[in-house]
Length: 420
Ligand code: HGY
Ligand code: MN
Ligand code: MN
View 1 (cartoon, helix red, strand yellow):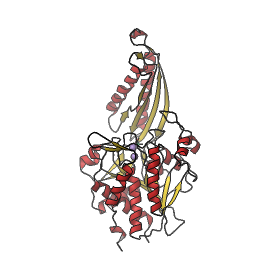
View 2 (cartoon, helix red, strand yellow; view 1 turned 135 degrees about the vertical axis):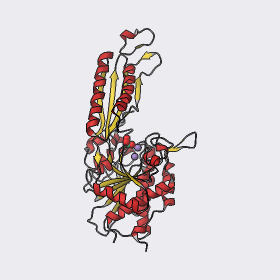
View 3 (cartoon, rainbow, N blue to C red; view 1 turned 90 degrees about the vertical axis):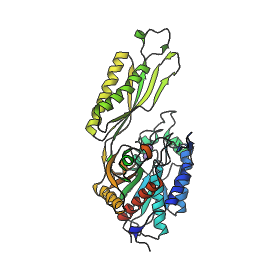
View 4 (cartoon, rainbow, N blue to C red; view 1 turned 180 degrees about the horizontal axis):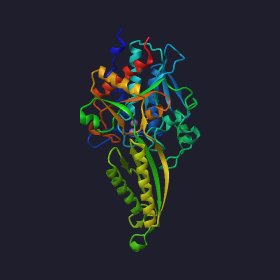
């Protein structure tokens, strides 16, 4: 029998599953890019869920689906009362997503379990793999919604009653429609013993520095705001500039103002306007209203609050100058999260034992791990993103890095699950 410390995943089997899941909601680009569009609770998300649940069933896992649609597959340990070591991530994607964001963490978790099964490795603790509902938050805000409910950070009723930003669809209705309104209560009755998530970095750092494994120390703070700017619709030709109350102009000032804010603050401050919707959106009509979103992030909570207050002051000044109203709605607000020191060190020493280069780093992106960190010792393993690209159908991670990340995940899980 192989010494558990020498166990490695079956990289081809893992890659084949990534390819298979990547065919669901596949998006093909003009230069051979192969991405994914599986917005939360759409038919494509349902099909992806069905595929992964089928693989869980094939592995003989006990499967739970909870009331917000989180799915957990568990391989029994020798001690039925022991809390599980959990791996996981998400399989919903943004509309222009890649095949690795989230998918890698879930399928690598499945691969770890299959490797244990294949080699007859028994563990005292159960080992589970989860995919959480609506991690992206692109359709239903906030992001990490499913894992937030899972850990008790958002009331189930409030989450079920979230309406999609674009067409107003109610989350609970979509969950029922795709057949994933589960019977298992949430928040979860028991916290995992530990949680570890493999994820692509989604940025340029590891690739730029030639490092294979990112040892993730935490997640930066996230602030999502929706603005509804209301002015006066008017004729584009007859209305003198001095009489205009143009929400489109205010929106443009917010876009450039956020870029200027991030540049002025420097450090880890980032600012993004990803959504702008004009009404009535016609060539010869001064807009009546504009709906837009602002995504601000910083690793430092004090600086993030500073950025938010500069943003708020800009909105007030623009509203007064242009004679429009600006209504603000918070879509997501999460403070920076520090992961568990022992788990961080375990990822680091494990990766180094396997011969991989490592560097410690915070995550610029939000992850389900930042919610699990509220209830159990948690850390993450990053692998490089080619060109630092993600939330782009060209997203790619080299097969050898996928295998390296999955092997680190396997060995971290074995270290916490107590092999017998
Ligand atoms: O927005 C994020 O950071 C994540 O992709 N939900
Ligand atoms: Mn992700
Ligand atoms: Mn993402």
